[in-house]
Image 1: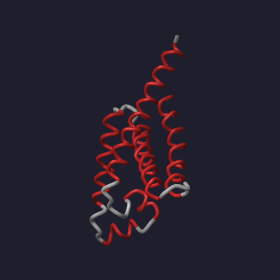
Image 2: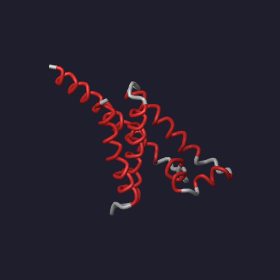
Image 3: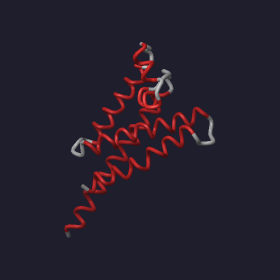
Image 4: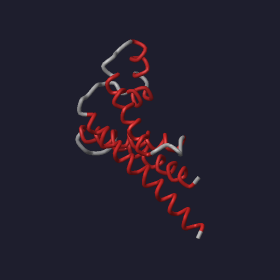
Length: 134
């Protein structure tokens, strides 16, 4: 239970931080995009961990990275129904709207950071659980 609370608090922190960095930070657009992509990956990894706490942090990070890379490639496909979804804020945030090769390194780095975050939360919750029993 403590693990899930840590993940939930982390999600509450990373979600607004990701939006702030992507849309409001006074930095070059490319930097905002990369930092926002890091937060995007971390958010999804933590969310999967929240709903599936027994999931391996490593495999969760790998799975999220694969899905986000596939979503990036999917941006090359522009059928009307996907364009209609991408016209909404939620659709644009989740599916994206422009394919960019330079997003892939940010997804890999963000997935690594998400793995570290999720793994650290898991280790911390286990250590504090052991200490509370003694």
